[in-house]
Length: 125
Image 1: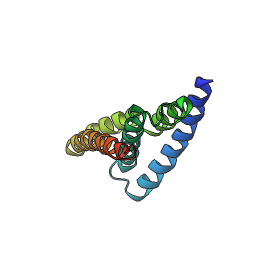
Image 2: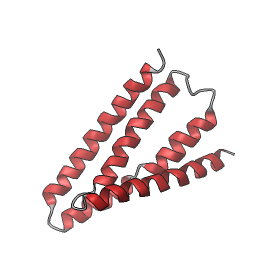
Image 3: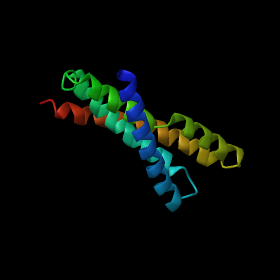
């Protein structure tokens, strides 16, 4: 049954990622803003869920954690798209933009995960 929840959540997360990324990309095509957005938002949300799970708020709901954290957010965020978009920027001569994408993605996603953890901890009190 776990595989069902992971697959269902992953399918939902993938559709949400595609929709969000396409919306951003159609408005600002010169940089992979869509991928950056979904990865930062996904990091924020998974940080919140991790904090709530650690505090026992989600411990009674194994399927909810499996569905949301592994399935939906696993399908929503995308390291592979980030990697290939960075490579394509570098190969096209936009090395500065490629470097910015790496720095922005890593720093913003780590900060978002931390902020999500902090916010998730507030739900515990």
